[in-house]
Length: 162
Image 1 (tube, rainbow, N blue to C red):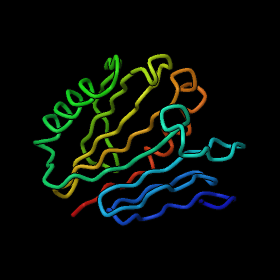
Image 2: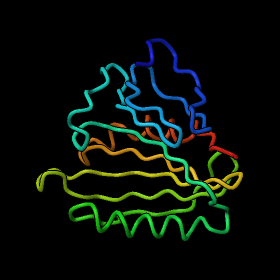
Image 3: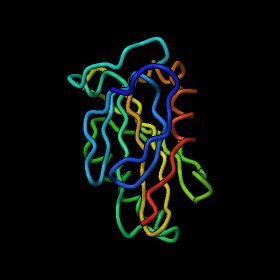
Image 4: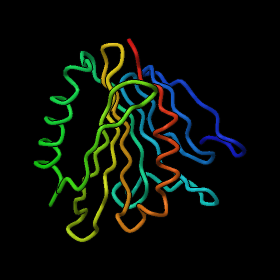
């Protein structure tokens, strides 16, 4: 768990750097990805048991993604999400720049356990021949409450660069 106080940027094994809020529980730090349970200010990190109910964050690095291949990488991933996530619907997509690199921001809604509307917000970026995607999944009713926290995390992302 990231201890209290002010959050500091951390470079993870996969080669990216991101600042996570104090109290965030890092669940996995692998060679190609990070999984964490987010905590909002004043709230403890939530257990990993209900991945589709509580705010969860992941960062994944993919090799051989260039700025020219970014749109294709995002497009294929969104098609795969539509096939994998119950009732998946892309509700927003726009260009984004992360740490000065070209990227996209997408927002998809889907159902968990057939009842709960879940929002998956993602930032995709190509840098140094790698693609890095930051994903945050949380109940759709909580999106507004967590918006500034999520935007701050995305703004802190320094993608893997080779």
